[in-house]
Length: 274
Image (cartoon, rainbow, N blue to C red; front, side, top):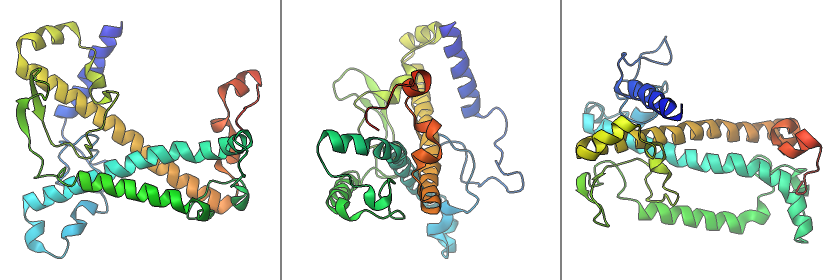
């Protein structure tokens, strides 16, 4: 059953990638942007504001240059991936700060810092960022260091093609992947490719090109999963910020069911960190 489910998953994903049906616009009243060809992971053809072309506006020559348009597209994808990752961290950290801060401050005998915001997470709209200025400065410097270290990880500057693995274990494909910071300690980028259906595995053993294509296909699926979760997180963290600004109530108290430990819901046990 597991093998059958894996085969079905990969077949459905492959159909969506190769596009056996024509690419269409998610908005029926607007055409699909010509620069969103389905090549990139999680490409839904959605850019109604034309943000990809915004850096080129006012220069007809650049707008007509396919390479300039593609470079702008990749630049925007870089920004989307990085914002998505930050949003996923923030969407988890925001409610956890409100849930755990009281318990942790008691355990560690530290002052309760959410009094100024009435239990809400410190933010631009909620206020309360003054005591966190030092941490914010360190976070900014860390982000700047990562950006400076990966300046060449942009379209047109990253070397691509087949090459030998660093450890000499075999041939690998080095490709430009937007947002690639060379950080994957748990090897999740290849997670979807770990379990090969038997027929795929048999062919991959004798056909190196097929094996590399399998790896590339499954890596694209993981990139799509990261982006979809990141887009949802960007919506969530924006919702947290505006909900608390409008209602002046911590988001964990507005919808407590979503932030109540499962043990409390099922067995009525107290949340020791709340």
